[in-house]
Image (cartoon, rainbow, N blue to C red; front, top):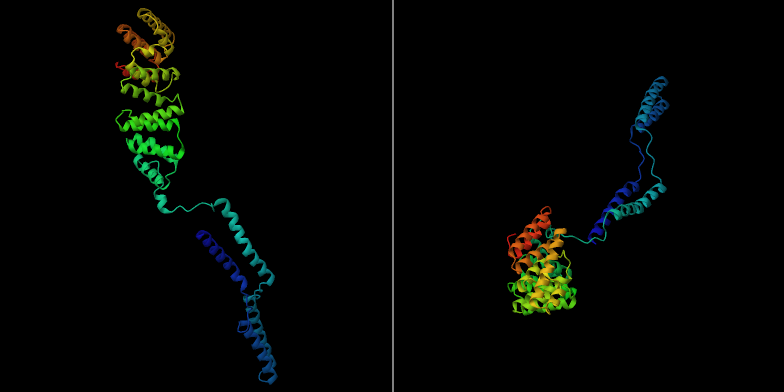
Length: 366
């Protein structure tokens, strides 16, 4: 409202500046001018002639001189300016009263923002600046959420940042608010369980386990919740249950899943040799004799080795092969497979990095 009031005052001042000269009539020049003096002198000469004060010849000479001066004065003065007509003044007044506001609106509305709210200087000083340190940006987001505690999107964005900063308690509170105001999802429940476990130093507590179970109830294939539920089973001493959970997770996971090496390493920890066999083959091997089971495993390992010789780009396959040879106690074949794997991916920096990381997870020198 203050802005519009200022605009109205400025428009009124502009209209007044235009109308003021039009309202003042131009006064015609009156007596006292130089030409009026010469006219009086001519009349005075006529009176002197009539009274016999001067002769006719002197009068004529005086008239000639005064007339010359009168003509010169008239040429310098010019015609008196005309008064502005009433119709012209009225037309100009109407044009000023209507035209100026219309012209101002026509220029402002396309270029200005009449509905844009005020942006006080104090708020400008606290506007987020991407160049600021992460801690400063987080502080500004937290101030925003203090004033807008039901902003679920804000809590959901803030929570993982707090976890990255090591503020796990604050991150857990942010995830709870995101769930309370934005609804629960498998990802939110699993993320909440992860930061609760982080608060406990990596131990999957009862509270964290409850969150992972809620996440799995929303999405049975959620990788994070299944991994941590397997970890909870391992921490409880139930290695077979942990292995079962991780086998199912790996069986459904794509080969390029970024978390796959982590789960495979965990499965190797609780059930050595398991990743070398598919889950279905492991189930079938339970009913075999020890010699038959060993022969079946060796056959599958050799088929894997043959496949990798034909196509050496499968980093996960190389890792399974090396791990299988180690479990079988054939360290020479494990070293040979490791050497072959490095040669196969030597020209691909990304695959070589994945291979080295996988070998480190197996306890080998990457």
